[in-house]
Image 1 (cartoon, helix red, strand yellow):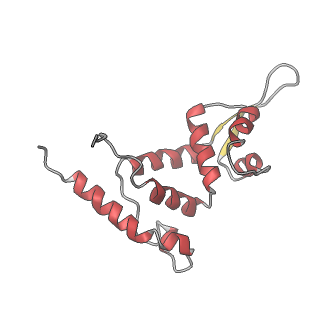
Image 2 (cartoon, rainbow, N blue to C red):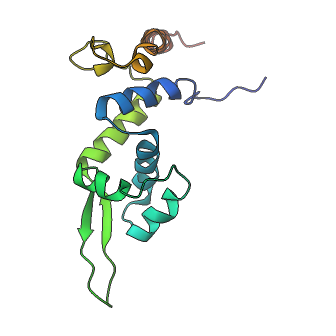
Image 3 (spheres, rainbow, N blue to C red):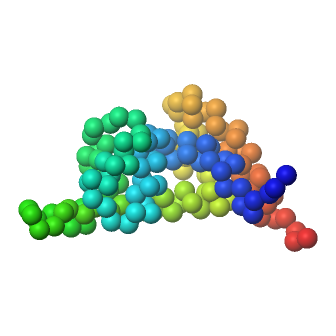
Length: 148
């Protein structure tokens, strides 16, 4: 069986659930932010083009903008140039943190840093807790593995 150097997607579902829970994002919102992160600056048309691949949500753009995930980079000028948007600093920090988790950084297991550990957490969040512990242990062992 062929191995990959970094098995990034092994715990993708767990990491995805953590960010959905922590920031009250939908899966489609998270996927949109991941797409836009690598786009740099984008137009509302580009946003709409990619959003056609997702569940129908006519207010996603407005919601992400109002919640501080995307921001205007440049206003449009009638007939001369189109408005440009970009991921906000808040959005960039979350996406970069997500990549760190995919690269082996642990997910916090304390209620103050992870809403999935709150008593009021949803059932969907609670069923992921054992897997978070397993992922963190896997990452710990990988970090302390002796070179062969």
